[in-house]
Length: 68
Image 1: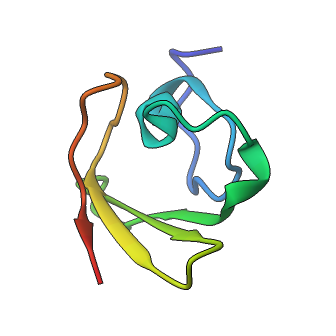
Image 2 (image 1 turned 180 degrees about the vertical axis):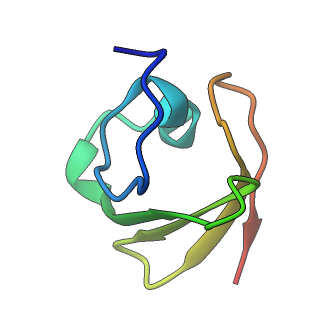
């Protein structure tokens, strides 16, 4: 299903966002995920009340995001 183009990306599991976990073993640490409408960015909310912005798609384990 990695070749399907969805209108939204709000599920925290998926091929195109697997890099957001970067060594996180507890998947409940990630609380919310939302892709931008222009398909360029991915916003991720976590348990530390931080918002991280990643480039989309985020496939590699060495993806770096900006935290706010």
